[in-house]
Image (cartoon, rainbow, N blue to C red):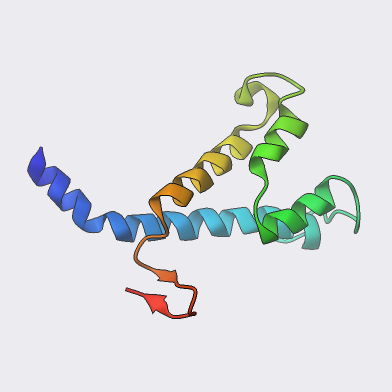
Length: 115
């Protein structure tokens, strides 16, 4: 088992970076779908509460726990029943990244790519 652990540890920073990039791109699609109607519509009219504002917040900082508790949880407790699976997955994916860090491919505060 220690050989497997050492092989996995060697690629962990790369896999973490890949995870961050894929989750970020998928999450941006939620925002652009609401704000621009891309990659699929419909586009939400400017200022429409809560969806247009959710698109703005998704681009700026994320809001999936709020989305789950205000839009999905009132319908039912279970995410599979209330349609909130993606909200829960994104919420915990971002929580994981907050604790695990960005991986090896990250832009540091100075604007340089870290390696």
